[in-house]
Image (cartoon, rainbow, N blue to C red; front, side, top):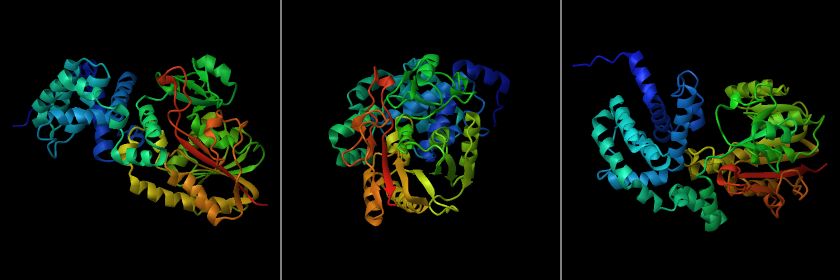
Length: 452
């Protein structure tokens, strides 16, 4: 016999009082990322059909926090859950795993009272037609998590435990175990919020309660909606990690010059180029991403020419003085702010992306006039997408040479400039007063000049 659903208005009111919608949204997002392999930003960005659509601001923030903690601490949580799941996870159980993962995250790492986290997790299971027959399992496992889970999780090396084997092994081979450990440890903390400002950084740091970084960015601790911060509506600044702000600066004085920005969306670097006085042509393959770029630039009061096209084949009527190519990549340098990356990417993806980057670089050179400057960058820690990519480009283009970074350039720290003349940053760098204030994206950038 089918049960009559409860009064929706009363149910929704009661749910909001106990925080169930936030937990339901978190479980839905985790299911989309971990079981359906959808990028976290895409899931969170859905406006009409997304899990966050009708959540109040407070619930939306809580859901995001649960998702972020669940992904950053997934390795530790999985080890704890495995200890108490004698037969493993049952198949075809709907959102059972996201419910257990998020429930354990709240108990172990978010200081949520165990009774509340357990009760809400059981209610979530009962809501899901495929998970509801396991509601007693949810109750039993999370009770054991609350009793013994902290000891199990605390005994693990957190950085190593929360880094999937494929990524850990790759970092150890490339950078050595000590540096791999530092990278992994840095990615356990939610990153601060970095802004690129069009005016005086010191003024905006004082206005927003932030700090001015060596790069000129203003850093804040995240709190509330970005759209509600002073200066957002006026276009006084845009969100951009300190490391991501460096590549555009490597082009030096570009006022009045023609600059192509390839793979331009969402537009942070495009905005830098336009604000510096360049005549910018921004190219991106995605019509939706170009629309978002145009929307961002309209808020900032900046004008550029936008083109929806494949940047690996697009040709212009005349060559450019400079080309900036921030290429699509594995994004392994951004796991601090994109904790889904380790669970969506693989070695195979890196090889495929490296092939795309090579095609993009070949076309970037074709777009560059003799004597022009090309800056190539990726937010990746993988040499195939950075150092090896540039070495291969130079091998097949005798007309190109690296213009080394200099110690007095305006990007902040001489440690970021490698002996080969390229830029390499790591997530554990830019250490400030505390872990919450510290860190930056892992980035690679190279500046090349085409012979006259």
